[in-house]
Length: 294
Image (cartoon, rainbow, N blue to C red; front, side, top):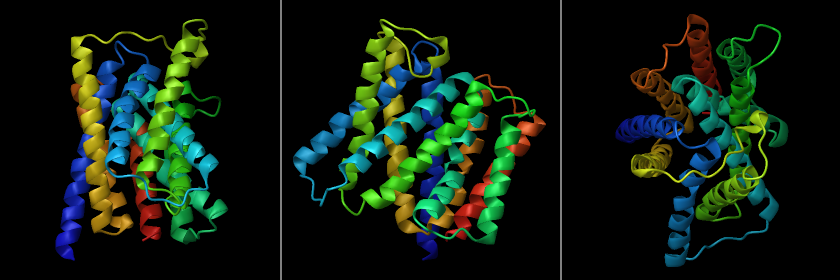
């Protein structure tokens, strides 16, 4: 048992580091490519990989929740879109922290829609998390920056996707669920890039952008983006299969630390005291909510 827990922790640390490296690759690509194009490349190769897997071993599933499957795909796509936009525009550690707020929103969605109990510690964790969000956003009581509300929405989108998966896995093969996300994440960017050829709006720069043919150096980072994200998912899945979710989720917050350090190497400024305090509060919040769920 203890050996399994140690393996789970090791696998999650590896996954967290790989997720941080995925952020580095996305940030490097953002100098040349629009966010919507990066999301396209993040998903398009995955679609072919999943389709090949299904060809080799056909799906075995009940089905019957098609629109929920589409909803999962759209929610996941939007979460990734907002996350990658923030990676391009704010320090890597802050973008990663915003995405990790998904734990807080998942707990709230499970409470309201799945009737799961949160408990006193869980509610305290949720409140602490929202205070942390205000600190990261450096909210002054007047307005939020675009990256702040998109960061929050990336957490909400991921939470909607995670919550829907809990229902979908009773009806669909896991590959079909992943394919719904990657297919939407390939088709929607194509549509938005075509629209961008005829229409521009600086307020919608997170979802609009014309296609730019990647240069040789860009293809290297596109390949790394795919490799890092794929292996991060593999190690994360292995980790969750070996130990309780509460333990694994706690270790997963190490990707914020990795992202801050790697971001510094890329030229990001070290977080201010208020932002750092917000990051710490969100980590504490996530751990409290995760442990509450065992």
